[in-house]
Structures are given as structure tokens and as C-alpha cells.
Amino acid sequence: MSVRADDVEAVRKIFEKAKHTPRDAEGHFEDFKLEGEVYGALMDVGEKKIYELKDEAYKYLDDPLPKYRKEAAIALGWGGNLMVPEFKDKAYEMWLNDPVENVRVAAFVAWAVYYNYTADPKVLQYLYNIIRSHQYTIEVRTYAILALIEVSGEEPLPCEGINVLEMAELENQDELTKAIDWDRINYIMKKYVPNWKA
Image 1 (cartoon, helix red, strand yellow):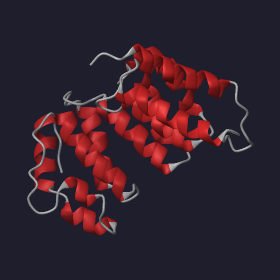
Image 2 (cartoon, one colour; image 1 turned 135 degrees about the vertical axis):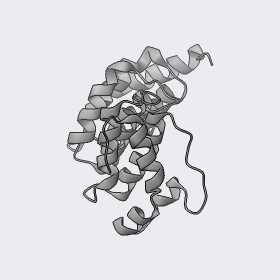
Image 3 (cartoon, one colour; image 1 turned 90 degrees about the horizontal axis):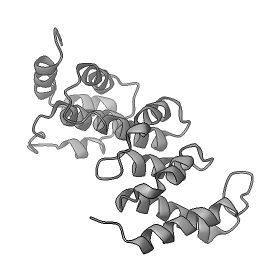
């Protein structure tokens, strides 16, 4: 899909206007309409694959507003979007350090996508450790399951009973742990991680 020049120019104008528009102490634009336009522009950079503006989007990874950090992470790193190689390490840093949970989750997903179909044993072990741990949210553990499957390159889990996306809606950690197809997870780990033991 080729990006239309007028799409690029429209997004560029929004970013340019944002550079010169004052913000309040929390980082909100004084022009409320512009706040939504910047969010939409970040979405467009990713969804329309506007590589020409990746550097502009990259600046929003450190923005005071969490919604911009999250959307920039999605634009730059999620599958189907830009997937710029230089974002991989920043995504991991955001996953570990961002103070806002939904930004961390977006960065975690972005980081994991860089390893899709690599069967990287260290990444698989890292994801497995997240899946096993109750210290992470149900949402993070669920994304770790999806990421483990994608990283391994194995076929997606069949949707018998509860599927992986429905797991994110479960009420508590114990329900999630019971719902996980541990046989499938353990099979993947044994197949791709040398000397792995459950």
C-alpha cells in the first residue's frame, strides 16, 4: 500500500502545529481539538505506514501524556504498523520503566513482536516466566501467551473452550492459571528452549 502524499502532508502539519502550541502543566494542549488530532496523527503514522514521519512519532515516546506514549509505541512497533528496528530497545525500556500500565503493555507487545517467528530461546523463557508469574496483570500474562506462540512460530491455539483473548477478561489470576493450556505451552518450551524443564 502506497501512502498518499496528501496523507503525509496532513499528518506533518498536525505535528508541526503541535510543536508551536502551548501546553498546560500536565502536558495537555491548550487547543483541545489539537490534542485529538495529534492522537489521530500518531495512529495514521502506524496504520498508514508513514515512514517519513517515524522520527516525529518517536518524539512522543517520552511525551508527558500517556495516551501519546502508548499510541507512539503502537505506531512504531506493533505488527502491521511501522516496526522500525531502532524502536525495539526503547520498547523494552518502556515496558520496564513507564509509570502507566497501559503504556507498559503497549510497549511489551511492541517489543515481543520484534521476535515473532524467531524461536529465540531467551525470549521464550522470558515470556514463559511472565505467564507463570502472578506478579503481572492478567492482561500482560495473556499477551505473553500470545507472544510466546508468535515468537515460537507455532500454529495459534485452537479456540476450544476459552480462547486466549477471552482469558484477558477473567476476574482473577487463579482463573487464568487454570485456563491456560499448559500442555501446549510446555510443548513449545521443550521444542525450542534447550534443556528446558517445567
